[in-house]
Length: 249
Image (cartoon, rainbow, N blue to C red; front, side, top):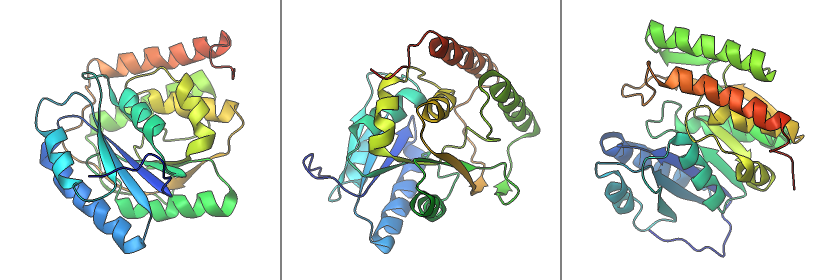
């Protein structure tokens, strides 16, 4: 594992990880293979969110000899905190955020990159909810209902036009989103809403693109406490915006 902080690769791949020792090995091997095949000048950043297993040690072993790093959060802070940590440490011209289970295959990066390149888009969101999306393995009916309900609340509370803000596969122009990430405060699963909400209000071009998606068992989203916390965070984002707390300095 090596990292030249004075050099800027083309792409940084940020992977938030919490107790992912069982899945991370296959994920990193697949990402490495894809980047090699594509000839991408890239770094891989695994952000360990206070894992209680061997996630960090495994990541360090698998990243040995390639450009990348294992970043450690000070305890279990949440996916939003982990992604924010990774993006602010990233050196790439572009940053790809992907989940540790690769629910969206890494090969779908091509779709996001094509849209970003051809239409000068600053933030590209992978979507499971567009007509062309391919959901090959679905979530349980209860989780599907929870997701649809949460999305309706998001639209009412923020005015965002997208049908899927929560897919963990997003490509962003690092320099353009960096000021936003420095303002973000949501540490857990509603951080996607905060990111997209602020990006649009900062005048960035945000688009969604249909992707392949396969549900993977072992979701870290609790059906009991997390939905309520996510709704509270959406309300918090609206309140902070109205108070001017997100305004550029």
